[in-house]
Structures are given as structure tokens and as C-alpha cells.
Image (cartoon, rainbow, N blue to C red; front, side, top):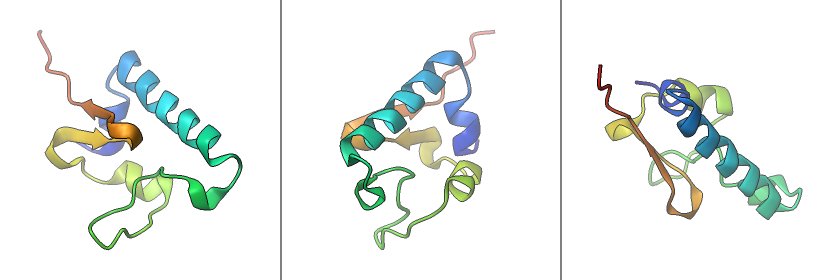
Length: 78
């Protein structure tokens, strides 16, 4: 499951993600160097574009967002 599939799996996960992106932008106060999203990759903190990050496989079927928030895969009950 990619990061895109994970964050768009239902309305709640998409809302959580969009709120995190909006909060990140507001906290950065217009300074792109202060943004925490998209998340950096690995211990080297490699910066990636949104397109690259959205296409990546979600590790452990979870996305970690700033301020300790996470979006996890919801189990289908059907």
C-alpha cells in the first residue's frame, strides 16, 4: 500500500492528513525551510518531493506525521 493509498483510504484518513499539512504550513509561517512535510526519508533525512513520497510504499502500513500523529491502515470489516 502506497502512502497515497493509505491517506486516501477513507474520508477520515484524508481529513487527518489534510489537517496535518495545513497545520504544518501555518506553523512554518510562509518559510518553506520550516516545513516538516513531506516527511524526510531515512536517518540521512533525504528530502523528497510530494510526488515521490505519495508513490512510496507505506512502511508498516502507517504514515507518521508531525506532532506524533499517525495514519494507519483501516481493516475492512466486509
